[in-house]
Image (tube, rainbow, N blue to C red; front, side, top):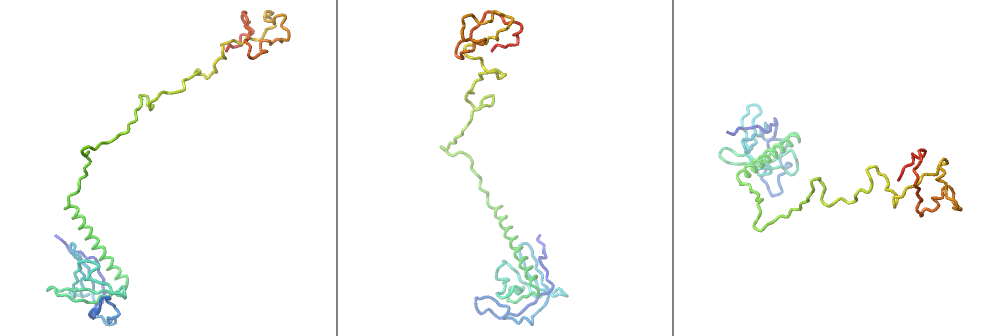
Length: 241
């Protein structure tokens, strides 16, 4: 069941008798006798479902003076004049279906603005309701995501090892120990400790002219001499490389 809803109420509006339209240039409020309105009363805009109507009523008794059913806006039922924003032309209709055109005016521009907004909101709502009903009636197109005959798909896959690496062998094998020590010099030769004063066997051999006490290091490229003696306790802190 549909209920009647009041959309807009304006307590004072003016109605004018308007001359017939002479051309397609539109109505002009300046052609009316604006100083002497035919009727003054109250305006109520009511909706019932998708229908909308402007009712002109007596301010005291509420008796109906004229009724203007509106099918669309902008449209023939209500039309703005070309020379003012406060005046409109309404197509009124009686119970027998007879129609006539009258002029409608507001004392303030904000009142006419409110009527414009109410008209636009109602027919915007009607349009949305019709769109929703249309979508419900029309079957929705189902998306076909299956493979067609002869259609293939290519997938690029990356194979990873169990340890999480992306294939290939690791390069750069470790060449040094965990402590980061340098490798021994080529040949694995040992550097002899310096000669001790208490050990005469470590003195340089006679006849080695031009050699100093460190003669073993006179040539970097020569193979260092080794001795068969065991280092003394005083040289225990020397390390071998």
